[in-house]
Length: 398
Image (cartoon, rainbow, N blue to C red; front, side, top):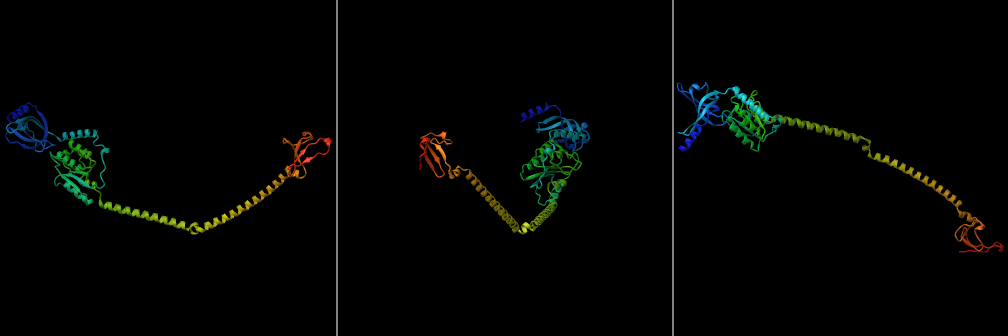
């Protein structure tokens, strides 16, 4: 153990002086003493170190002040503690803090953490509301009471943490991560209710702002008043001016919703009544028309038209058939008059040779040749005799 303590002391002794920023949480300065003692705590985490400084080099500071200390680390082997031997202490002014916040604001804005497209809409009626606030604080009372006054059934999952001092960033970030992991929590509210610029510095801390940006659940920031603007307001999905304003935003007003429902029902009822009345009037007008008042009348009219058309069709067909019959008779008589059979019936005959040629002159046949005579009622087979032998003989063939 002694060897280890010796090695640590030697290592720390070789360290060069460093600048350390923190908050004075305890100051012991006795009149006439050459040394002053104070405890310097980290502004974001629960880490503190004792500091010794020559009383002549200690400026006018008080507990709670933020300072920057130029000191050399010192390891005390007796109890194994680390302390700082300060050479200079400078108070951190409000202007310096605001300048740092402004620089951080520009950096985070360049990364897009404040972009409007990253923000999501708050739910209309959350199943459970996550609330991060101080212990028994007025901000908790304002959010819970006003939310339940608007919606009596509102349910809360409350995390009471430090909202001022060194442990604020760590506790608020842990509560935010815990509530974000709960499936039933549909919206998270971080409420404080204003304060001085120094009191609201933890809500402009980079670690807390990045934790809020990574939160998947819709986030409402109700940290300060209308004039306060911590960086958490810029990264949150909705910035409420006060905790009461946050309560009005996260839940609807049951009275307004009921009034809206009554108004909507009345409008729907009026629209349905008006539609039914219009359809009833249209139905009455349709029933008053002749075609519906006397539906058989349309059939009767069409029946008379059909009978008239049928009679006209029959008359036309009869006339056409009679005319075509006369025409056919005339054509038949004309054909009969022109037919060779009519000529044959008057006693004429047509002679044809055995080859079927018609005999038109005596030169077309020769004696001894057979010819066929076509008569009106049959055919005669004739033989041609020489002219000197007298009248020709004939033979009738069946």
